Image (cartoon, rainbow, N blue to C red; front, side, top):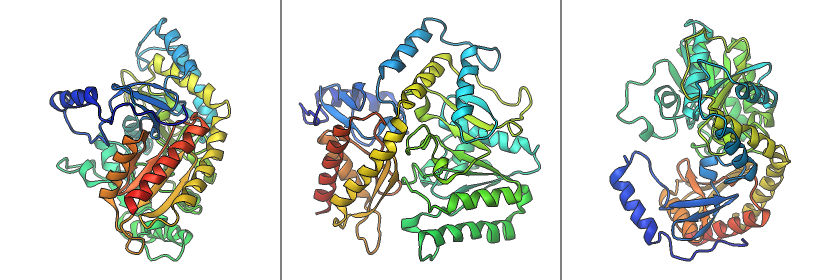
Length: 443
């Protein structure tokens, strides 16, 4: 496939029929980007129910890192399904869980780690929150997270999040003891900084001087939760001095560093984990999305001494599902075939490609990213930096109609996150189409 093949202007008749039924039968507590109704997928291509073919630029929200229905993953799922589908890991044992944990501890940036398996990203962050507070046996009730971050929609993870007000509206009271601080967003620095590096230093100083100096004693803070690159918040890459500085600050006060790598992990940024770009070794890492090729699975990996909750303190029924773990093992095998390094290389080329085609477009305020985690922030004016929300909607809808599937992030950022296995020709065909759409919308 050299280009998208649109047989019927989307949404086609079958898609419209399903969308109508969906609106009547499903609670509409989620917001879809455009009326795509998926029939099947193969690597980086999706087919809808009307026979249209699309280049997948979102990977099911950064999940299908090894592409859709990779043969090795499908074979692993089939083989495990013929053995047993479920037997609760939190009550019994099976070898596959030990094998998967061994793999995770070897590739994780956490030193001498132990694993707890979950079913999703939000559940991973809930578990990490309990582990952090439990480790200090209630003596450190406060937790810090960042404005712009997203950690999930259940109560603990929702309380940690601060990317959109709608996520919390009408749901208070939230989990107490969580303090939000500014994230050093280079394009929209919350401080009057003259450079990205100064923005990072001012964010760290704010924590030290204002949070620890005036609000809470750092000895009462159990953990700092952070995304190495903001995901839902806009694919924001922090200045290079920020995460190493955050690690030093946490160690100074004996605070646990919890890295939410749910979206950034498993090769997405051109490293197995985004923390590795900055040489940071967190105490706990939370995972999900790309670890199992689309099956519901997640995990936290933490330092052995930190992963110390007593028996009965935390468990679940489906965490570590054997079929999902089989998919996890197969995914690691596929990504180990050079796809992580390939994502780093092609990601740089993709950034250069976008910059060369969009640098003169007034609608484009910033182009950023690492690996296959790329954001193009749209603004009404480069001078005012006012978010171009309606223009983002137009770009996404028109890209969809032309056979490419990016989505949004933050206030007005085009989010580009294709499978790491995407064919190079398809990648640049999709980038060409999205670039042309952005230019047209901005003209």
